[in-house]
Amino acid sequence: MDVKVKMPSVVVSIEVAVGATVTKGQCVAVVEAMKMKNEMPAPLDGTVKSIAVAAGDRLKPGAVIMSIE
Image (cartoon, rainbow, N blue to C red):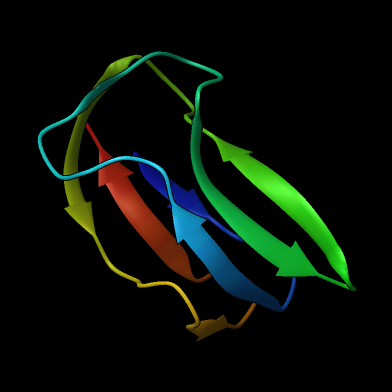
């Protein structure tokens, strides 16, 4: 399952690495939108398969941050 942003955002930090085990609700990334920092939660328990962005990247709505299986 993909973790996606809902609005134009800038990636502040990625909190996990590829191969990391995450639990549902765990913060996996922090993005800034409308001058507010938002924690992006893992949508399910699983393993991070890929990370598609880096800190500083500007994202459009619907952009994929990472994939968790």
